[in-house]
Length: 250
Image (cartoon, rainbow, N blue to C red):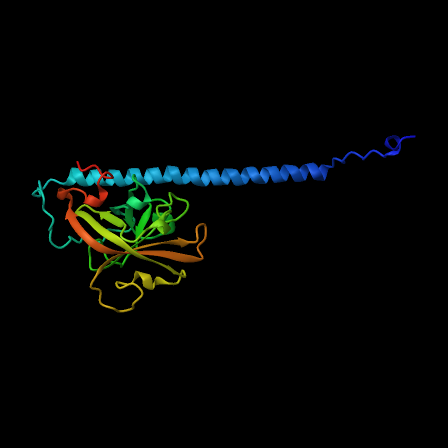
C-alpha cells in the first residue's frame, strides 16, 4: 500500500456559529468606521460650504447697505489709522475671515461669542467677548473647530511665517501676518490677554489670535496661532493685494 493511501486526510475546518458571528462583527465594524469617516468628511464639506455661503451673503449685505458713495483715489496706500467697530450682540456675525493658506475659496463668517452650541457648532468662527475688535490695539482673539462642524480651522497647523490673515468687516479690510505658533493646556486663557501671555501689560501692538483644539479629534490642549497687524484699507478701496485672485475686486 502506498504512502498516499495511508496518509490521513485533513479534517475540513469546522464552521461554527461563533466563527460566523465574529466575521460578521468584524465586517460590520469596518463598515461603520468607513461610514463614520465618510460622514465626517462629507459633513465638513457641506457645513463648510454653508458657512462660506453665509460669509459671502454677509458681505453682500454690507455692499447693499453702503450708500455713502465713498471713492478712493487710484494708487492710494495710506488710509490712516484703522477704523475700529463696536462689539456686536452675542451670536451676531460681524466679520469674515480670509486665509489664502487655507484654500483659494476659503472665507468664513465670524460671530460674537464662543459658545459651542450657539456659535462654533453652527455659525463657524467665534470672537472671544472682551478681547479687542479688528484693527484695535490689543488682541483680536477668535476660535473655531479644527474637525467637524465645517472645521474652519482645519489647516491652522499649516500656517507659515508671513502668511496673510485677512479680516473684513462693514468698515473695511484688516490684514495681519502670521508670526508664531504655540500650544497651551485648556486652562491657558492668558493667550487671550491684550498682550498674550502677559497679565496686566499695556498693549501697543495690534494682534490676532486664532485658537483651536489639539491634536486633531482631541481637546487635550489648544493650538494657538498669532499674527501681527500689517495694514488696513476701507471697503471702497477694494480687497488688499494679498487676496488678488481670491476675491472679486468688483
